[in-house]
Image (cartoon, rainbow, N blue to C red; front, side, top):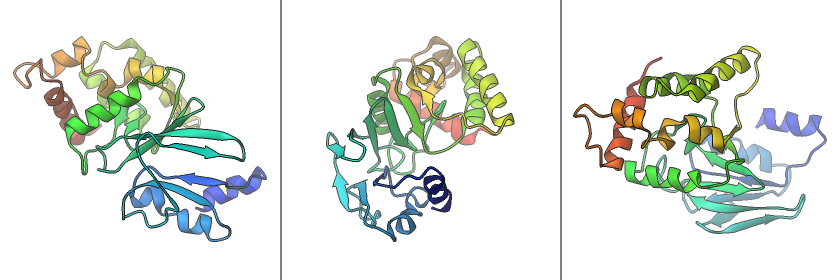
Length: 224
């Protein structure tokens, strides 16, 4: 909580609401400290493991925040966890650990079919959407992605940009959804290069879920 409190203070801002995507401690651990000084609305999915929530949300719900006036649509995206949600509005996507910059989250509670469907729901959002994910993994994710789509020039350029940004101590997120569609292997499982990489008897080329599951297993065991 401390870094966020310092950032708010340095900009003379007041925290009005908190949008939680899932129950993992690295995403909800600082909420109690942030809400201890003043009442703050905390939005979260229906999950008993998120005890700090003041408002429960479901797929398709709309959250309207008055100060400043903005609204977000709730999108159910199970896969990383069973109750994971994302929030989309104003060309921003707060997607927690579902969609990463050039990657996706591990399947702790969901199935490959669920995660694939969740990612495909996010993939149809406007290309100018800024993907605000939960972790800074771009360099490692690009390195893996090149092992399954080595001929992707946009991906190679993205890795070079990410390396330069990290060397300058700058973040690589948020990213643009249009860039994710061009580079992220988990949004590109039908790309010829990826189909070929996952072929050679490893998976049925017509089985998209099996192909996605195979890709996720490769990422789980990958060491840069």
